[in-house]
Length: 340
Image 1 (cartoon, rainbow, N blue to C red):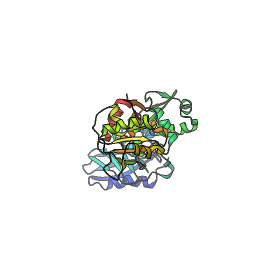
Image 2 (cartoon, rainbow, N blue to C red):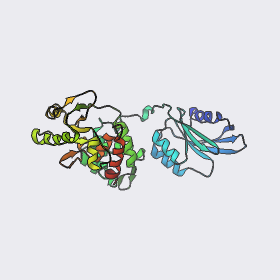
Image 3 (cartoon, rainbow, N blue to C red):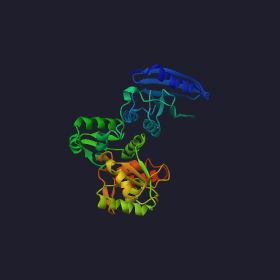
Image 4 (cartoon, rainbow, N blue to C red):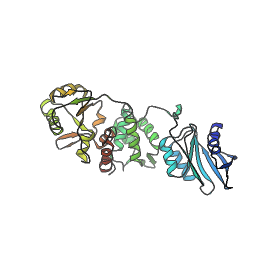
């Protein structure tokens, strides 16, 4: 593996700009990177062991950290693109990193380097439709099955039969999860090893694209609206599923709320609005209706106090998109219902 000129220069430029650096010199090329000597103005010298990776995944970085030699010099990772998650893993384990956009982190002797926020698009060969996008229905179904029990060891064949998809589709998803160190491949199957980080990443992609919703206003107070939603099923035969804060409090009442979030089948929404005697508004809504575009949103829903409520997983994903107390509710549901 050869490190290219850009990789060498992105490290050299950072060090030579420091006022307390007397000398920086690459003294040896290695199979996977290079070794550089750094001399400071107080005469102190140390070595940098640089590892170059053309494509970086959290799993490869974790393996690199496990085998690095900490007895000689300071270790750094150099790559064209380094994700936020990979960067955090490096920082948590004391490994420096440099990418081609100028983002870096390095701690050694009296040197502290940190630069973040420079845009560095993911290389084309690494880009693809995210497994977390709302349109990735099959991936969503597989992920939801994994979160049915995060302590379980899962087999590809079982997941493909359960979700009714090909083993190839499950295998492709698992490859991404293993590369990102969210799932570990064991001799007898696959196990989720970092569910919290996996869910956080899912929630970020989940909220990137704004979905269609119906903002409504009712003269009734929140408790009356929720009671009328129960009658919607009895009187009209229309299903509704609480989500967001109004759903989350059914699992753990940690916040107060003044808005009802609910899933209703697209073809039933207008009829539901008329039955509930609501009006669509541009602002000041106290009810938000999300179209139930596919059944994955209501997988493992529960009936709590005669109200249908989406699963804790769906509560987490939806609450993470709600400004204010949404993240607080998501975190509470995560700890009480998902990671138990």
